[in-house]
Image (cartoon, rainbow, N blue to C red; front, side):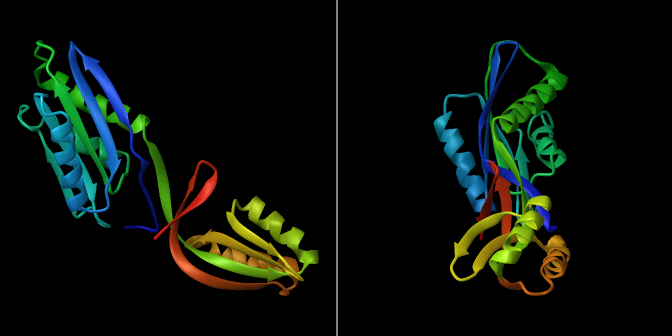
Length: 217
């Protein structure tokens, strides 16, 4: 896995109607193969009366757990096209189940591929997708004179500030992507004449969700 990867933060549900057949796509983030299997079983129990509950998922740092199933549909018309949507979106640790209630009209292989593909796309539209980035949390100690300069740097570079403490000096806690850490440290040093102290607090994964930094273990 690279230092950046796309995944689902909040799953969603999308519905597609094709020639009276109803396709319900349920998307969910999964951290492991076990979570994916549990989710699939949950959907099969929820939609026990449906003709098909096809699925696709990719889990693991290197997508080592990647599976799909046509669940009774003609081979290659459901699971694989669904998986191709997930992979095409560059998603990791994501599972989707598409439930089909048959409407009485046969769609043909091409129609099935389009329907299952379209259903997954609708499910993703209803979900919140994020980019997780490997980074560090830094603590910056500075005087009030240089505080404004550091604020300008964080705003200009879109560096999330998670907390600020005001005592006889200012202590800022910021999150910086690994690839930006060296440049950020240099900018702070130059702006403050090396007076501000920058220390690493911890390594982490983070993402910007609804305009705020979300930290992941």
